[in-house]
Image 1 (cartoon, rainbow, N blue to C red):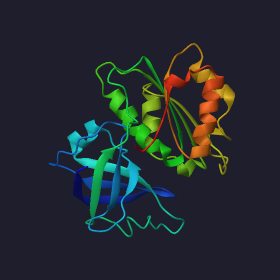
Image 2: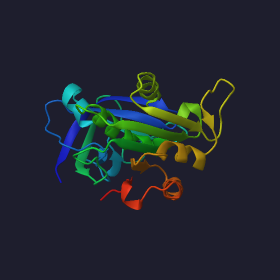
Image 3: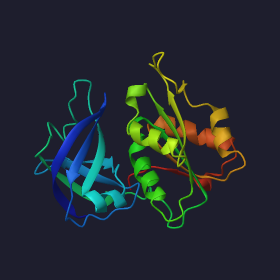
Length: 234
């Protein structure tokens, strides 16, 4: 696989436990499909670890920014492969990798289900699908610990207001009185409501137990296994 070295344009806090790492890929022919990942690490150092690409191919062509959502520790420290990376740092990107992608011909209905930072590849796919000449009907169910943990929250609010994405967000732990979204883990009734009388192609991403539970719930709702896709780095 090809290894590119990109300068960091920005490393900004997106949630209490994740940063948005924006790399300047302008003028570099880095080709990928929405939903794919890449192996990322500080230039000249090992190891590199897989991270899903959060920007869509269309966005990278337009603004030159290759974006990753990177989990950080409670003290704000990145994983060892990224260290104290910040604006001006140089980051090696190897790839792309993975077959977690949209089909060339999109179905009429797409359902995305995300847990925590698993939203990253789904954002890439949603933005890319909406850029098609005749975008499909798109639904997103997004679960996170608290309202502050929802990454790209502004994007989802805007797309929901515009009627371009049917949105369901739920905070599973801490949520104050000001929170107007749902609370608790995703329920079977919610899944049923999103797939009823529809035949969506479903994309899932999040922690392994979360994904396994969502697969069971989708199957319970009548979605056949062939219409359920999960992220796998291979």
